[in-house]
Amino acid sequence: MAGSLRYFYQYFYQFFLSLIMVLCGVAAYAQPTIRLHITNEEGIPLKQVAEGQSFVFEVSIDGVRNNAQPKIHGIEKFSVEKQSMRMSMINGVSTVVNRYTMSIDQRGTYRLGPVEVMTDAGSARSSAITVMVGQEAVEDATAVAAIRRKERARKAFLQVSTDKNRVVVGEKFHLFVRFMFQEHDIALQQIQVPEFTSLIELSKSGPKSGKQVVDGVTYDYLEWEWELLARQEGKKKIPVFSAEFVQQMEDDGFGSFHRMFRGLVDRKRVNSAPIFVTVDPLPPFDHEVKAVGLFSQLRASAESSVAREGEGVVYSLELTGEGNMQELDTVPLVDIPAGFKAYPSKSYQVPHEPSKRRFEFILQAVACGDWKIPAQTLYYFDTVSRSYQQVQSESVSVAVVATPGSNKNTINMSHEEHNMPKALSESTQQDDVLMPLSEECVATPAAWQLPWWLFLIGVFVPLMAACWVHVPRKAPELLVCLVPAWGKKQQWRRLRKQLTRARTQGNLALVQEIFVTIFATQCSIAREEVIEEIMLEKLKRDHFTHDECQRWQTFWGSVNAALFSSTKQKEVDQNDIFEEASWWLNMCERALIKE
Image (cartoon, rainbow, N blue to C red; front, side, top):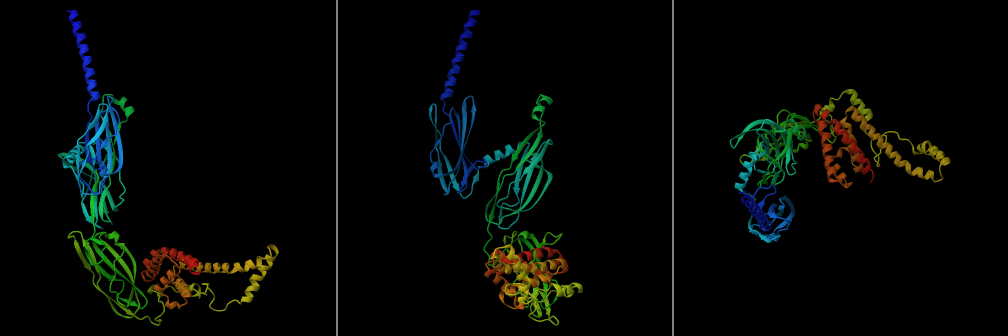
């Protein structure tokens, strides 16, 4: 009996070894499995790819022992942008995945494949797949649903959505990012917010917490909200968000000894799926339109109903509604009567009223009479009716009366200057009034001047005598050449001192007088004839750039606005005006004088 058992075990052992050898041989020469997939760059399967947009062609080869490079038929019709490969090894047999990021510009139906790969047993060949190319990419709904179910089965994931998936240029929309989690031992560490390269971020709020039921499962969430808009048309991609969180580890049987080496928590990361928002251009319209939203009122008002000739009146337009108000820096004024000259001043959000924005203008009275500023119209694109609408203001009447004892051609100051304290007025008249400039833009006394021969005796002769002893014989000639330039610098220093004194006293009228006198001297005209158009023409002749000319208009408008506005507004804007005046004084010295 024992011998029979011995023979049985011997034959069984030989049979088992033979079976293992046969299976190994079959496995060694078995044909590999080749699978083909078309996905987007996020790995979501596609039924149709978009013309001109990138997609991924994935070739997965299972059951090969070498890193064989596949041969793909029909790939020459596509534009391959990049290629990558990853490999995993199990029991000596590898699985190789080759990823090709490619695109195609022509719509139609294309055949991609078959794919051939060389193995130890010979050549292996897959079937071909059909690639449909259309205007937009179409995801495989069945595969996407499976991916979403898999994501929702996880303990935590990110959900990104928008309140609108199609907008027009300038239309606001909201982006919502929710971190969804089931377990209470999950703690969010941070949300990594990508850069909105093609969108303008207007505001951000959050996080706020809540609960949401997804596929019958209740999740807690933390939500952030962004207010965005696009200035250019096209299909805009909302980039991928990432969330890092930690979760307490479960007891795996090793207790605290195992946790000592692995840590008390697991750190994990989840990413959101990308979404897209289509931005359409504004429909054609007869007028230029920058306002997009829903607006209900445009109200006009004037600071005063009566103005003296030469004074400025603050004219305001207040817009009420919801829309891209942050993008509106000004609104157009039309049909301004001949009795006024309009200067844009500033625009700002009305304090504590986010639905209102105010646009201010300075209307300088240039002719006496009873004038009516007509109703102003603002055209906008209504995001509710998806059509162009308008809001209109009421008309405003302003009477302009003559200034007693004033000359019509004299540049008049604002009503604040007529009420200037006596001490400040006398100081301005005695010390701060700019004297006439010579042809070299050098301030000279209006009365008695130092004779040239006395100047030579008092300055040049002692200086030349001193230099004659210590420097070569050519020094006197060199000194004579250098003195005029030195004199000009000293005289411009005097102008800067006057500007400093004006800053100390808050005297904006002196700032206006300084630049009017400079331009009057350079253009060889009377000071009363200097207007903004002549200043701009002079700057352009002296090769100032377009941006610098615009900067001058802003500065000069600010000076006039500060003179003609209320005292409170002047105090707010004075510092910036004096800084800009100092910059322009330097520009005048470097550019206007070097002709």
